[in-house]
Amino acid sequence: MDWLFFGEISLAGLAMGGLYALIALGFVMIYKATRVINFAIGEIMMFAAYLFLAFAGGMELSPWIAMPLAVLGGSILGGVIEKTMIRPMLGESPISVVMVTIGIASILVGVVEFFWTADPQLLPQFLPREPVFIGPLYLAPKIAYGFLIGAAVLVLYLLYFRFSRGGVALRATASDQAAAYSMGINVRRVFNLAWVFGSLAASLAGILVAATGGLSPQFGIIGLSVLVVVIVGGLDSILGALIAGLFIGWLETVAGAYLGGEYRMPATFVVLAVILVIRPYGLFGTHEIERV
Amino acid sequence: MEALLEIDNIEVVYNKAVQVLRGLSLRVPRGAIVALLGSNGAGKSTTLKSVSGLLALEDGEVTAGEVRFNGTNVKTLAPEKLVRSGLFHVMEGRRVFEDLTVEENLIAATYALSGRKTPALSDSYELVYDYFPRLKERRKQLAGYLSGGEQQMLALGRALIAQPQLIMLDEPSLGLAPLLVEEIFTIVARINREQGTAILLVEQNAAVSLAIASYGYIMENGKIVIDGPADKLTANEDVREFYLGVGGAEGEARSYRDIKHYKRRKRWLS
Ligand SMILES: Nc1ncnc2c1ncn2[C@@H]1O[C@H](COP(=O)(O)OP(=O)(O)OP(=O)(O)O)[C@@H](O)[C@H]1O
Ligand SMILES: [Mg+2]
Image (cartoon, rainbow over all chains, first blue to last red; front, side):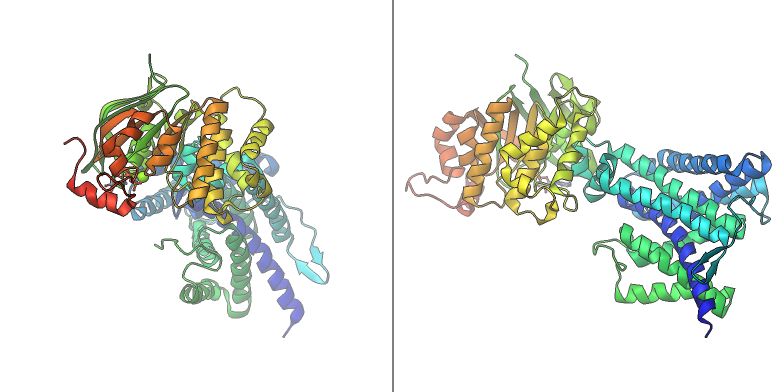
């Protein structure tokens, strides 16, 4: 066995896993606050990546301006979806709400195909290109810098949850919605902000992932891997999302390298099946989670 | 004079089907402690939820009548706005945020102060720790690991942070040992006296409630069946027999179970 190769593949996998973790964090944030399983998260990140393409490619803005703009666009999209399509569903059965998010996902695919066609696109290069070495191990610069940006944002999120007053309001709402109302917390606003910031995390990760491998309207499929990540981690556990994100990213990349690209998804689904058998509520989730 | 809280003839229906309140009225004057007593299922918690607007979360609706806080119909305000206008509801079962620390639970309550001019926050944390020194020792601890009594203290502490004009307390004695109940009620009376906060106290424990309240209502089946100044209620024979556990003819104390058993046979004023 070539340990150097294995090390490099693992490293790349973990870096991709860091971006999965960021998307998963966005998903978990929305789920924890609002109890909505958002099947559109992959398409929201795809949409943001296309916005980046439009700003940086079409309008020829500097990528470093295009990226925040596209992330902002993705966040606003999340906020608007919550306000116009999810909020009116309040009190409906969880399954109906899930169906709405699936509907939103296909609308977004349609919109993107309408404006950018169904053909794959390449994002303009904007990350530094010098090779990155960690010890003896080579890491593709796109992946390395993507990981760094993603990890920085992830840490900011965690610090915010843990230490800010807004983080307290979010966790209070997640823990007991009626009690949060009785504290004077504007719960509807917390819901909306959870969608905005959840979509922000996903949008940023989407642009960084698309920068490594290209973009097509099917890009949102990544959302499926992320769903595996959050189910493995336990739908409502942030720590679970982070660890499972790294793990699934690593597993997919290693499976892809040793068994061939077509084994990436099957490998993750085998893991999903095993985890669900031994721990139905995920590795770190709380027991009373309702499964879809 | 207009009372701080006025409930006028309200009717409440859950799930558009089950009627729980049937024309209930009561008032809480400024700065007073008013007790609302009744046995399980009488509709006490429902009454509080229709005031604070939390009814909607359980698919309940006020179908008739009106609730006014400070003269304003509470229907016109979103739940969080109502809290910010000075009406704080301590829900049944305390409902502390279990995976937040004691301190974070208090921080959550500062949202009740949004848009209000209030004294420095550090002072109000000190005020809470002054009333409940035990919370200060445990302030970095998760609220889920507190004892029942400490959780009740935290629930009251959150109410203090909000600096309300009215605190609605739903069964603070629930599941607490008698000694602790007395301690909690003493503090409730102190808060009322020192902060000037009016208190609407919902309880099954009539004896301790009427001891600190100035006025009491007793409800059954969604209606008030008897009301009056606390001392008059305490002296009332029916109340003594059925709510204070002081026996009628035989003059012996009864357990609560007996009272409920008797109640089925004899109804208030009917
Ligand atoms: N969310 C709900 N949906 C349907 N019915 C409800 C709901 N909440 C309460 N009820 C019913 O309304 C009635 C009054 O309930 P409520 O909780 O107000 O009583 P309570 O006086 O507070 O009783 P307890 O002393 O046990 O707390 C009960 O018969 C109860 O079954
Ligand atoms: Mg009750």
